[in-house]
Image 1 (cartoon, rainbow, N blue to C red):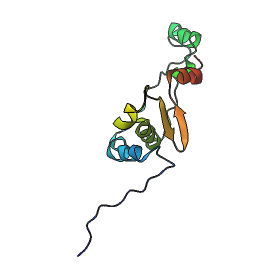
Image 2 (image 1 turned 180 degrees about the vertical axis):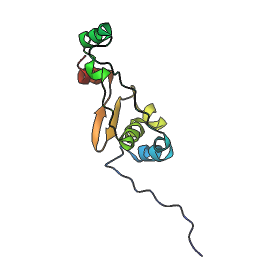
Image 3 (image 1 turned 90 degrees about the horizontal axis):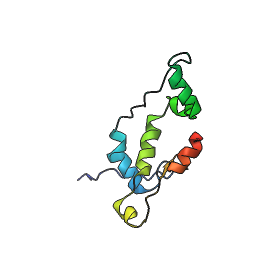
Image 4 (image 1 turned 90 degrees about the vertical axis):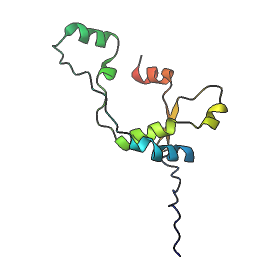
Length: 118
């Protein structure tokens, strides 16, 4: 008689923080379509008041984000940002951290301000 066991998923430590995150990716994140944000695309001579405010506030990088992103990496980022109920119960404050291709990603408000130079 043939065995009818389900295929065993091997944990990929290069792409996922924990087995929970890999399972979350396979059951949820992988099924979600990544929709890129619509950029703020004005020519320098259009709407000078808006362009002046973008410049004064240091929002040029925010107003012109990268549009070429890897859908798989975005899905893995969100899967690795998820934490289990048990992990959440062990922490006083939830972390603003994820993991992408072996690299920890800090997406705390203070780090976002630092990266965006606010």
